[in-house]
Image (cartoon, rainbow, N blue to C red; front, side, top):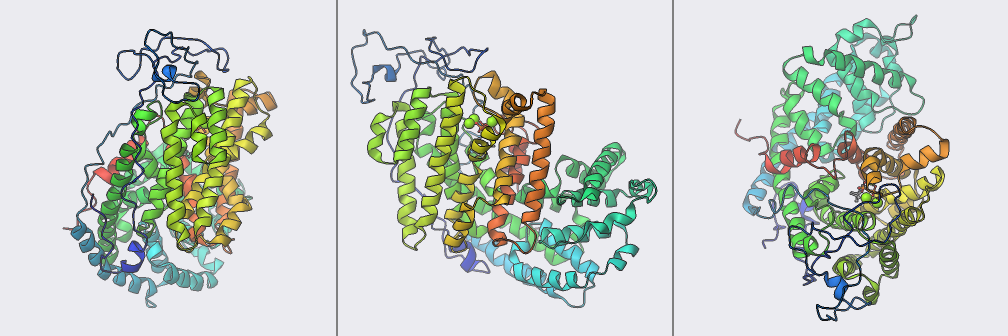
Length: 635
Ligand SMILES: CC(C)=CCC/C(C)=C/CC/C(C)=C/COP(=O)(O)OP(=O)(O)O
Ligand SMILES: [Mg+2]
Ligand SMILES: [Mg+2]
Ligand SMILES: [Mg+2]
């Protein structure tokens, strides 16, 4: 196994590599060859979600001939004490039917081999264009409009993290000089780009700048707006940055969306591509890494006059792809070594998809270690969630939750055989993290992640108890627990572990106050997932969902419930947008992963359950980022 060398030269020397002491191989690779139980419930009790006892022969044991379940041949404490085969096996409990689609990637990403000299070459090649773009950003001879368009493109290409201070200094200057009179004279496109660039960076430019595009008598946007496709497109993008009370942006969103949909088939070339792209997903709700690649492809005209920007973007994409493919290889190899496929074959096997999810939080090269840690912990969550929802009996769920709360290896004895390897790996991984981060006094971040993990196990248990008792929670009760089972508290805290000095104790204390922006991201996760997964889950009696809780609480139709939940999601987005405005409660570096978590929900669940069935959006994204070649450096 070839470690990433941490000596690469160049501008990133200190930053990129300061955290790349990747854990390359887990020494605790447990050797277990558990066979999967063969007596499962194969029939779902449709009329009621309570897990009932029944013994049904399962013929779907991964294509293998049915054999006696090793679990039915173990002692009550789970310790192997084989009995003669003639002994009647104890009936296997009823289990919800999992049958999740398998991974579409298999071992594809394991075979990648990082060429360190290539990585170094890219790091070196970044230096010159990076300096040139810096000069452009700080150039005092460039007029305000050109400067703002430049900063807009730099941001959309995923490059603004390279110039946080320079960009802030420029925007500060320009924001102070904003003259609303000026906006009276300029076109919609120019205004909308400037509006976005200020809001992207936390400056609260007023949405009144769009007032002049409304007809004062009818109160609606004018016909002229519908003739300006680029202007509409940018207004549509701007509207996603709306805050509470910005009715003009609510209207702008509905208006531009309707008109863009109407005309999209009449357009050609880049403009057609841009409109199709924005209607699918606007920049603000997209995954930054993917949005950068798409912007590069479809908006070339925005930045092609700045040669250094084009060059920087190209080398940057090439550099990042190498680094990310190596990270993906690493977590894929770890997953394989840990033999999850053997011990918990009923779960959704989704390593590239979870890595993508975490890459969505932060793509900066210096968060390499952080991504690996957060990916592993999120993969633990997938095991836990699918075990609770789609495999374990209520007694097993209670026992697993108890063991996770006890968090000591001796608790393993109480667990069903199939989950023991997971429990061991979970404790070992956290142990390793604790040792690693104790050295620089950052073990507190590992503890916070662990506590959040214990909390979500309790949250999942609560859902299971409701289901077991045939109880549908009241909506407030559901939401209280739902913010926990959204998984975004545990993921965002786990994301802090590898982030380094900025994720200090003060940052964690802020997290512990359960700030509005975090709550909003959790709500979006919980409800958007529920809206897109409840039918599938209901069919299998798998989960308590917000849709069912809402229907029961307010005695409304499913359609109305979904509409109301979508409104709550819309409002939560406004909370997030407000939370990102200056003065922010904590640094932007800490806020961005929370915003990005909400974005990833949009990516995964906007059109369907993209996680359980990852063959559309996630497959396209994974292909774009880790399979297709990045932009060529040749031309
Ligand atoms: C809830 C949510 C969207 C979490 C996103 C964060 C995340 C990657 C968690 C890991 C577990 C997971 C993939 C849950 C989504 O599936 P599911 O629909 O089975 O989750 P559920 O059982 O909580 O409904
Ligand atoms: Mg689930
Ligand atoms: Mg669940
Ligand atoms: Mg769900």
